[in-house]
Image 1 (tube, one colour):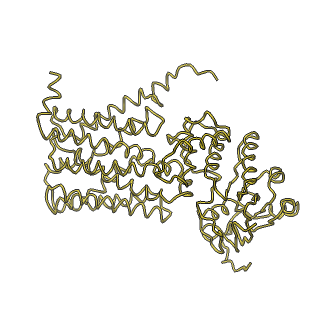
Image 2 (cartoon, rainbow over the protein chains, first blue to last red):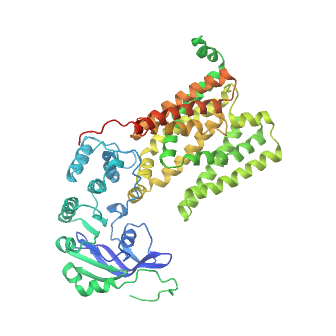
Image 3 (cartoon, chains in turn green, orange):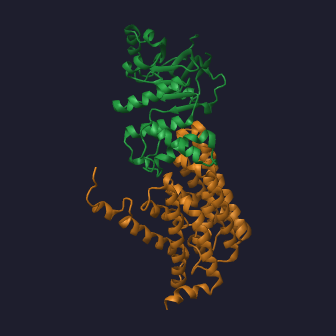
Length: 246
Length: 290
């Protein structure tokens, strides 16, 4: 399988301080990769880099023909105005944007697609509910339904199961596994290592520096976990310019 | 007697112009007001109306009380401020409200200098600030308002989807399209267009009244965005028509008349609005079955 995304000596960060430092490696097309690491390890930063929300401080991400619109992204804290008067149905239908754009009409076939996506996440009957009335778990289900409609080749999930009960996360995990079967490329930041071991063939262990990347069993060793835990979270305000060469 | 309240003003052609003007203005200002409110920019419109002052004043000084130069001056000033403020906030770390505030204050200061140095007589100033007394409008202003309303309504329909998505989930819109930034800029342009119309109908100081109050009213009656726009248009229309009649009979400027009527509707909605109104909060009724 070919590389969907390739990181080449990638450094991402804020105000010149690296949050992801000298990361190199390949995300293969169709792979299902967990990104694991302590808080502040750079998982979200890496994802923001992948979707192009921030620019690399150094190095680069090669997309090998993956266009920005081929990547669907579920941020850790979705920047959603829950007081906005929009229904669950309309919100999910926005997932059709890539095909419809700002003017395209939503026909009968599209309405069926939206209904199917809502059913897949267990939100049938919620169509006309304003989004402000959803619980945290229902919100996450709704956002997964929108991801389904986006029909993207690459799906990036930033801590998708945080503060979600086990039933909901099991349901959503089924969708993730199904995406893997459909040969989509999935990257997900996770904290529950049991979930990672049981479902994700590949893992990137990140602690600002990449600690290990490969088959999950080889990556999640006690030795590696200890290394990751030793990472210092705070930025060094007196840091000199980095001259390391990967 | 009751019939005369409506028939007497209709005999006056300039009042008919006023009535037609608020009709057009209600149609275009309704949706703009709703999105100003939903984007938490309710006061931005007010601030923007100050920003347009130097442009209108320059137009006035260049050509006297002539509609076209004043409109063009106002448009130019409004677009310049909207685009500059939008560009600064998108390209730097400064939030949009802060960057707008800076441009507005500088612009208003500039406008006051122009007005003071050159001197504008009081009668014109009153009309300028509060709209025409007894709702008598000349046809030139009506034409400008009608043109603005047409452009605004059509453009609004075109940017509706990206604009709504840019409000509810800007991060998602950015991930699928660049339309958010464009929609926002066009929205600011539409705001300026509607402000200019509102200036001519209601004066610079109270022009925002027919734009933002109907939106606030609509919020109390529905949770659905499309219905909210419809209700905003209807309440703008009712306040506009009732306000113009009020101004005619009381011999007062149209700006405060329309704004007071709308304010009355707002108070009623705060009290009785089906969505979050006070009475419904105090007496919610028994809870439903689970």
